[in-house]
Amino acid sequence: MAETKKSLLIKRYASRRLYNTETSDYVTLEDIAGFIRDGREVQIVDLKSGDDLTRQYLLQIIAEHESRGENVLPIDVLNDLVRSYMTGKVSVVPEFLQQSFAMLRDGQSKVMENMTSMNPLSNMPGFDAMQAQQEAFMKAMTGGWQGGSTTPEPPKPQAESSEDLDAIKRQLSELQDKLSKLK
Image (tube, rainbow, N blue to C red):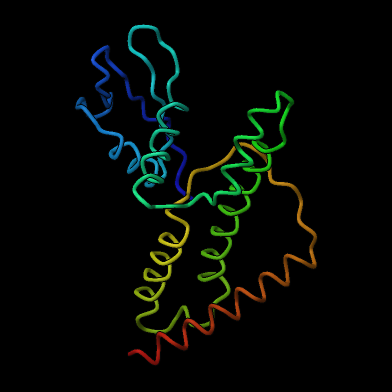
């Protein structure tokens, strides 16, 4: 997991330009997306009113990526999101999404942890380079999701967790065999 850091404060001026208070320079939406990919929490506020604009800008970043063909959200999910806004009732969708991403981040963290702590190959020459490649692969597969969540994860059934761990170990072993054959 990324180490916990305070939120990066971005101020929006009346001209709609975005100002990074840490580096004292202007940033773009793509820069902000990069900060988030790197594990930073970002807060965007209107300089004049003090209104928190973070949600608005994060949605804009997602919309821009989706419009460029970087489709992450399936149409069915987008339809469900729109429905959840239109019903006027309290929706379980936000909580479900938050828990799902928390489980994804936790799973990624456990895989990376298990690669080092329980791997008998860790003393093998070149293992560090292979581990770095695996970490890069995991980061690429999850889009760099690392941020922490303050929402506690629901407890998992033990049998399911050990089955998942065995499957992950089996896949890791297969990947290691393939990597050794490539060398």
